[in-house]
Amino acid sequence: MGRNIVLIGMPGSGKSTIGKRLAERLGMEFCDIDEYIEKKEGRTISDIFKYGEAHFREIEKKAVREVSKMQPLVIATGGGIVLKDCNIRALKENGVIIFIDRNLDDILSDVDVSRRPLLKNGKDQLCSLYEDRIELYKKYCDIQILNDKGIDQVIDDIIEAIGMENTDLHGEVIISKQT
Ligand SMILES: Nc1ncnc2c1ncn2[C@@H]1O[C@H](COP(=O)(O)OP(=O)(O)O)[C@@H](O)[C@H]1O
Ligand SMILES: O=C(O)C1=C[C@@H](OP(=O)(O)O)[C@@H](O)[C@H](O)C1
Ligand SMILES: [Mg+2]
Image (cartoon, rainbow, N blue to C red; front, side, top):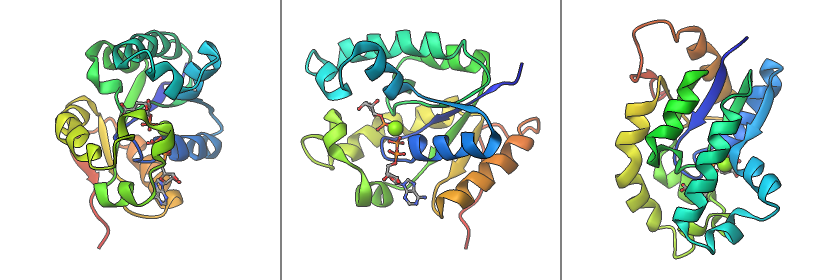
């Protein structure tokens, strides 16, 4: 059975948007972990966060365990998935982990904070999230893709890079910034 393609990265880095279109391009099923959680819990992410982040992370951990067993899927994770290494271990069992690396200015230019409780006190929280997480995204990924161009071009880069996943380029930037 084919492997899953798992997208990780900061909130607003493009995981949900790119993941959905990537799945269409590859003729694969798509699962957005946040959407999976909202459907299963019958509540929005923001409502779940009202019980605290730790409560959300436990729900997220359970969702990851369930979704990572389904195959083959394109999976868009939530930005905080890397906070528990058990999430990454589960996702790595059947999947290749792709870090969607989008610079903060581009994220700030269009991120919808209404659906991201961690950013409710202003977008400058994004910088502290980035500082806390950037090394985790880089450590856990098999492939790192720069999202600094049109979405369809980023998808082209991912499809090309997946073909290269058996090389020893794990963790290195495979697609450098297009000049
Ligand atoms: N390369 C890009 N070009 C234009 N818009 C982008 C690009 N990447 C992401 N976006 C936009 O950024 C916003 C956040 O994307 P989203 O897929 O929700 O991110 P995530 O799931 O990682 O939080 C969306 O409006 C999306 O269309
Ligand atoms: O970065 C985070 O901790 C979060 C990112 C969100 O998903 P996106 O990455 O799709 O915004 C969602 O899981 C929740 O608001 C927490
Ligand atoms: Mg998303």
